[in-house]
Length: 150
Image 1 (tube, rainbow, N blue to C red):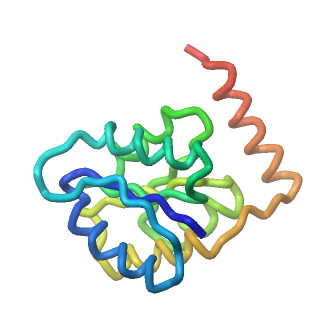
Image 2 (cartoon, helix red, strand yellow; image 1 turned 120 degrees about the vertical axis):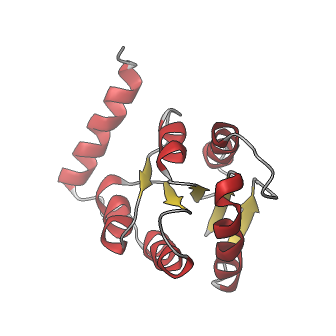
């Protein structure tokens, strides 16, 4: 699987710990930054990460910021992206299996490295069920997105 990973300055350290795990697990990786703890704006990194996904250059994305909230908000503003902020493995698994999530958002100041590794494993190893009820619900979310409600 090809994974695109990114984060802002607050997520830089966590992202740095996750990259070796992904590489050791045999995944291809695109890192869109941040590349240091120098301040950067999370929406800029989130946009670049999502562009890589939408261009078909990656299968899934992982976005790290201080709480994961900003990353989730920014990613979810982009058509075709379904991002989820997860702090437990059940959610990291179920968000893919039931909701076909393609970006996992992590809060570097909220969770530790070991939990983040478990979340990555759960997120990467899960596939969308394709069950009728899940497909129907994802299609409804897509319809809301397409309608561009104000």
